[in-house]
Image 1 (cartoon, rainbow, N blue to C red):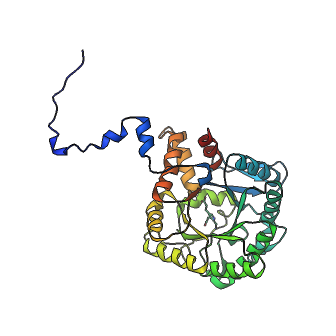
Image 2: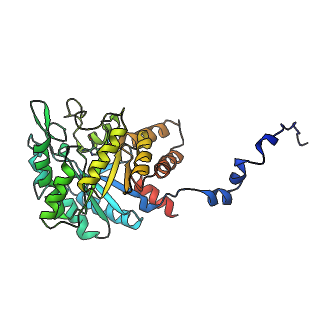
Image 3: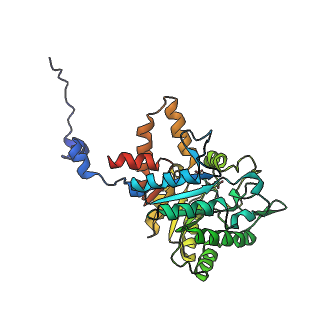
Length: 337
Ligand code: PBG
């Protein structure tokens, strides 16, 4: 027997019912405002020395550091899945890290060798090279340090040398993730002077001093070295007007595209940037966001697969043109099906 309940009088709605559009899959598809596509996904990868070598990252279950030969295989898989670009981060061997971070501009460093290897084997994919000193420095800071102070202009001088060896090795996009003042203009001028006018700059324009980078620091091996924090250069999470000034400045200095980082806790900043600036905007779903989804999924607290898609879609809704995400390959393949 069908149950019958009394109806409330809904005449106050005047016929307006939001659920009308949501009644069926075809209708939900028709009114869907945003899409998530393989070309929205940029895949961050960690490179290590060795041959046929993979190492686990304890705090990023499911992500591995890869030797150069395996990075080339990963690049092929990414290309085949429709991913437009890779973002590459080196785990520099300990004995090459130093106070001067000189390994950053060694033309034969791990980063340059992997850029060269992928560029020759998989020329169709874009290569984004991170430029910051923490992957080469003895202290895990993104800048040179003197008496506890992070030096701005001296750091920029080293970054220029680092970006030039990367461009020579085949980097298509230079991505300064350091938050030093003036580095975009300095990099643009140096790249142009050396004939790399075609190399793009994707600036980490609004990068916050965040606890969500913890697992990344394990991945690149800088975390255990880091003393103190990065709050004299990365942004205060209490601010978003300041993020707009950072972005405006980087665009004025010549950035081709800008990034906001971390991702999910900063969707408001992505939306403000989208409304204020007409440039490509990328969001970085960082290592701690990845770890939270993986670990909450493994604990049975959330549906992991559903959480991954919902989190990525949120970036598109907020107005990002693309997302750097450790889920890139998995999701690009899934979307293609
Ligand atoms: C380093 C850098 C960091 C990340 C990207 N580049 C860490 C930091 O600034 O300490 C974080 C990425 C992630 O957490 O996934 N310049």
